[in-house]
Image (cartoon, rainbow over all chains, first blue to last red):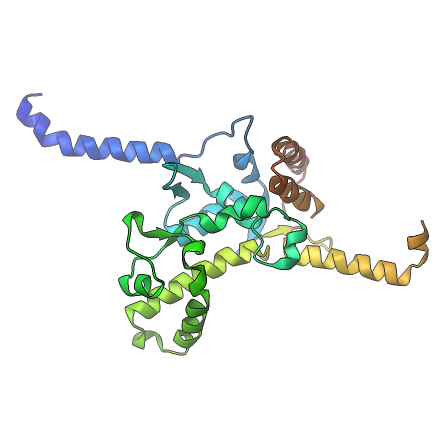
Length: 231
Length: 36
């Protein structure tokens, strides 16, 4: 290969190397023995969208919707993390006071709310949320937490606007609202459905529902069985 | 359900060994069952 040919193919080689590097960084790896086994956590079966699938699929799909990637990038450390770690961190960052009984530490101060995973590309929306446009266009909940009321109020308003009359700002705000909703549902443990129903042919339950039913049964048991307290 | 509560509780507490052990036990049990 002479110098001219090398110059001709150099951009292609550079792009190829960059793609390989990003792919390598995002490729799921086996869990290190001294770390949480995120990969194994992703093997747990769940019911989602009417189908049984591994937790890993749900985690990747959710993250793909929110951040357009199947892994999330930590700009502070320059590392990619798995969707399973993201899901587990969201699940243990309860947005609901009732679930703090399960995760009193919020997996140590709710790290999931600092993950810059929400893709916001509309400059008008960024301005309204008080955010500056940055590389990668990803923002964390904690960066626009004080504007959640604004997002909700506008989402309710926009829902009454026919699709053809919605502005680009409306479309992008609804999109962000839906992504937030997806994340909060996981945090409140209403999704995915992880608990099999004891009755045959019944769909699995979200952890939140199964947990509430268990608490209710325990309360009823105490009320109807006074002997139980004496044991 | 109690398995999930236990796993989340251990993750929340930063108990890596306990989390990994419980997870491995649960996956081994699931291996012997079939999904609906």
